[in-house]
Length: 252
Image 1: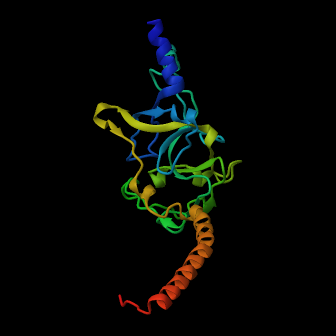
Image 2: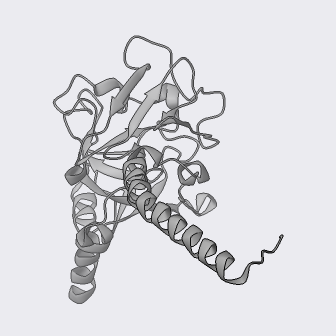
Image 3: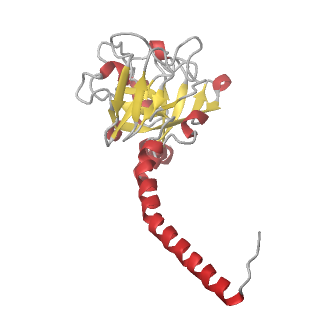
């Protein structure tokens, strides 16, 4: 039993941890009461959150102020410490990554949500919701995500106090990458809800990184242009010499 408990503690600390979903902000992707397994291993190797991933992160600047908390009993506390039960006292949230460092994220009217000028097709958002919210509290915005930060939003757009509504805090609504616990990869409980949590296809659409990749491409083109012109002049000169030698030409 001691070995089993030690292994459970190691797994919870370094590999995988279970978390309970306390709210409706990620419906219908996640329902209140779902248990998700979070991959904590890949961040140890320098991996950072990517667009479209569902991530768990520590409360960056008192986002959970005023939210009700439960008081676990001794057994629940003990089991949560070794990862056999979700922790009831940790200040953690779960949202979807929409923007990473260098991205421009924008909402106008009811949407669509745009990243680097590309509209997102978001079938994962809650049925009946619009991608953007028309209000004066943060529903309309245009932000540039700085290095070391991510911009997160809930799938239940009209019921999620996410990055949009914390733009007045110290991080301007951004979540520091250092506060990310890991990526939620599986809905493990209840059995009827078992499912993986893949990245939606819209976050892999061509051109989403165009704003970041345009400068290198332009530099490559500028560097190649002199070589192309030099090669063209050389070929023309060669053709001229060949024509003078043979006195013939071919039509093709």
